[in-house]
Image (tube, rainbow, N blue to C red; front, side):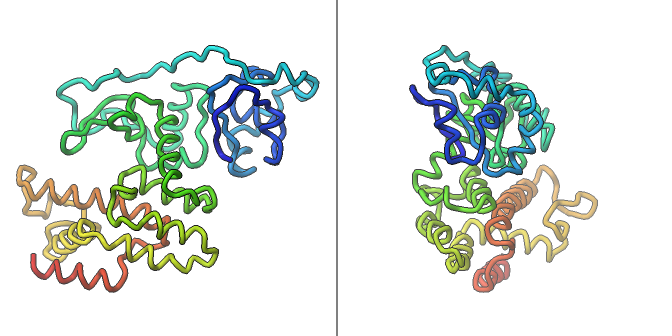
Length: 318
């Protein structure tokens, strides 16, 4: 139970029961200013592992008074409908016009975690949140994506831009669980891979192939992961991925780009004003993103042999 929303009548004692954590530890992990008081509607997080707890809240447990919490009457520790202050956002509610095509202030890694938690206090990030932040980075300013999309925060678009980063990531997690109930039973590494693919729009009910939820559910349920190869093959069974990979390999073979697929302006004949220049950058960007979560899920970024044969055939016709 990594996260839940506090309901009227919830108590810290009830929430801690069966988790392996004490009331003090969960109070510290959730940065409760008053461990005797819960608020209806607030998000409450339970660490995935003792290691995660120690990394985030371990040092703070010495500041929590165990006797005071233990001696508090149950009625005091019960959640009440106290008013919740609305978070203060560093970005405007609507995107300005004439946005830059790249983030002007993009924070990554620990700098991103720290800034998010400083900007949105009482919303600590767990390991799944941090994994998404590592992939997306954090921008407190709006910027333009290719096409007509604009983004801000942790790669947030559309309605998600009105949420805090953690709220947006939690919403995505709940959406993923809605069509993949087995998600909670997956290992944390598998959860990271699945969430990465879904968060970035590469997987989901509307994404091809349509039977991904079933394949991954079987993958999760099978301890031997016998369905892993089938899921890997089905992941690559995408015309978009095969065509993008074929174009990248053609450019590499013809010396237009570097072996890693990036454009080297010192050797490439492509001009930045040439449409193919932008296509090359987009192909590489998309496939690097996709291969990131593929590596987490399958331990490889290479396509299956049968798919590579198809990619080679596409490349030969370019």
